[in-house]
Length: 183
Image (cartoon, rainbow, N blue to C red; front, side, top):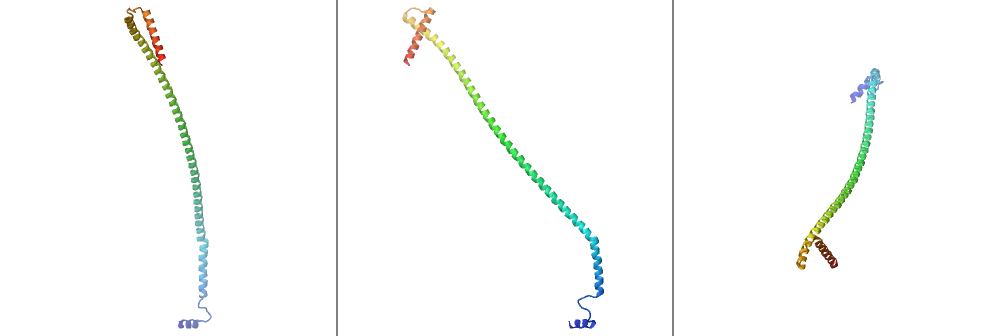
């Protein structure tokens, strides 16, 4: 290191060893200015155009994203409204079905009651007809038995229909009166 200090001191004492020579500074400044002007005039406008295009694309994508989000929110609101409408309609349908079911049940009960009354009435009419038929048959059988018995007891023939009919009727009236008295 001692040698380097002596070499610098021997060469010239008026020049600073940290600063380059003046011609190096001038040529370096000219090259720097050429590169600076080239960047300023050629490359910087192209980079600015590219950055502006990128900014516009980003802003466009943000606008598209906002628009898509607004559409999605509108679709969600529409879907929610449709869902609420469908739920309301389903409730109305259930209520209408419930009312219809009540009407059907009441109509079926009414029809069953009407049918029951008709069947009961028909059965009563049939029972009354059979009772009348049985009464007629019983009167005839009891009358012929009474005439036979009375003929045997009295010892004379009761062949006269008017006499026999009057005797049978009197017998039946007496029989019914004794039945009522027993009750």
